[in-house]
Image (cartoon, rainbow, N blue to C red):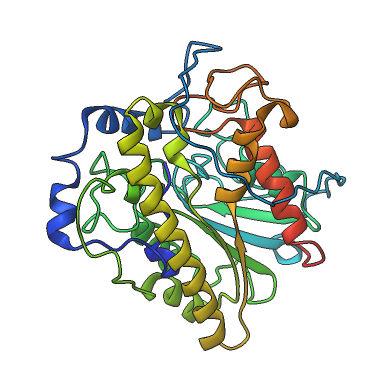
Length: 346
């Protein structure tokens, strides 16, 4: 699952008192959902289980560029490749372990075998898979630190398991191991991009609580900047209130979660803009996954999906389980991000 804030300085940083209550007071159905945050742990045996819609849809003006590009051949040496360092939760994870095989020409993700262990299974792709292997403009080695169930900081919003690596853990792991630009990953400020897709779990674990959501911290993004990072891609929180799981909670819950997500995304956009202005030599991109998923769910058949609520393994479903979007939706996310990064070399 995926909340995304602190990392880039634009997240829902809750008071510690709120964080302490987040799991204890969580609605039972919400707590149950976190077992799905492990890679491939949430695959449904049902192919077309449908949850009735209870929310009012919102129109958007986002358009999708549907052109395709050929896949570049992976580089044979680390020094000639570009680098993508990804941070986030189950909406990004592929199950990478830094202590295992490093990204290489045979597998640009290093480990596990492509496409990795995504939230929808071990044989299907997510958006980062497509960006690195299908829509890349250059040979790219991907270090994907994203971890299923991650929150920005476990001391602020507690994850569903104590072993989950938060965004804070992920960034610290990067700084310690990749910050020095080791021989196996000789990245530079110009040939590396850093993506942050987090916040889903922070909000999912706390939207029903009161608390201070105005206190932001730029510490994590600043750490990456200090290490030499200059290219940053931020992805906002999708309308998870329209997931089958949340729809089953009733309209009051979905309305409340939507309001928290909207506020989070608004503040994230402002924070990204401020970060760019105050950090010289920085290039930032903000992808609106929220608008895209709303567009898809408002007109699912236009995108080849059966409807807005069914979930399972069939290719014409928008959800692979009751909380994670399907590989088909990830495909549209990737197409948009491809357009966003056109001409950058990534």
